[in-house]
Image (cartoon, rainbow, N blue to C red; front, top):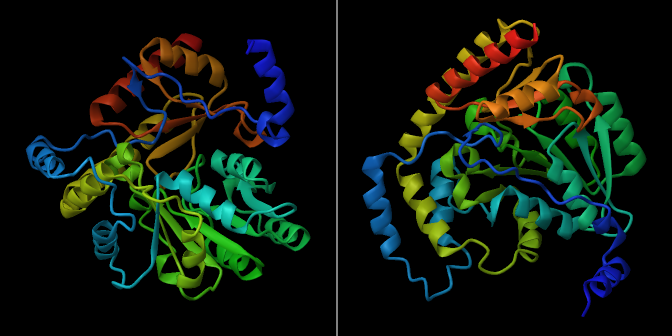
Length: 364
């Protein structure tokens, strides 16, 4: 079949809402200091490498993984201090869980609602799962506009609401009372996305069970296990039993299960890395705030949002100096002039500051 024939067939059969999307772009980072994706900069300590590899040697790659990941779930419950019968749904990262949620409650005319700017996958997954998406602008300093959110809830009656705590890409914690008001007003599910909870020292986990429509979503990616792609969802059993029906069999592979179990047995290592990242976040925020023309927004995540006069030029200047950050300028009106900087290692942050000082000085 000719290429032109394939293109014509694609135009005919690909759903319009999918055709209108752009694929999620991940820029190449080879040879660069990678500060664009909120990853933990510290690898597994050398003394744990051999025990981890030994664990992997025992994995039977010729067999399907445990479809229910029972041992891993037990480890997760233990690590979070949950009851041993607390139901969990596991996903291939948070992205798959967002997709499972949309598939479970979605349908023609049903709405997924989220504050903006927020995590781009809420909007993307809503659209390619066939839901209508409604974004509600955040208020000053990226806080929830409670009146606007409640008005949108009353008007659109969303089946699904996402509230990120802390929010990505802004880094701030939303007001807890405002979130409670939204949960109470919502006719459908409200999912609190706690991808960055390790850095926030704040959580809605103690509110589970108090609201019949509240679910909590987390990931191990930001903790230092991004390569494993493991997300989890917890909440009332009646909800999770339904969501389990759309989870694909064997979605958590054997190597991920074994590696995550091993990591959770050595959780203190990752806690120490998290404390180190939080300390670096505060140090880096103070140094950035002292630079001319740089506004630093408060963050409870493992990244910092800054605003500068020439975001495009500064992004390209850092890239030329071997540092990859995230350019948010142009992605949303509230993010004009904004760049997002992942908290790296002490050496990476030092290199970042040197490059920023040089680039800003060159533009002065």
